[in-house]
Image 1 (cartoon, rainbow, N blue to C red):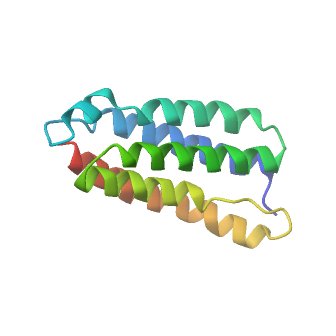
Image 2: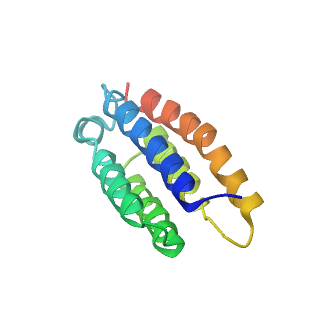
Length: 130
């Protein structure tokens, strides 16, 4: 059975890894200012706080996932080309993360694919900002 605590830990760990990866992903590109400012770092920091504070409330946890997805989508709207695509990929990844206590198998599958999908999107982001 999927526990709320384990789902939050997985998501928070992945978010932390993303934050570290993204902070190193900035270089010269058409999106230099956006890459230099790395506004997605704040979105992931806020997410980590919100997800950690959800303390057993799956609705709040799912709301934190949806907010991060919306924040990343908004940032994608300010970017161009590959950076916009990478931020949209990250947004879609987090938007798809919904934990349903009535369907632990689907929730486990979503959490299991989170790391892989996030790693792929972060790779695209790093390339876009280099």
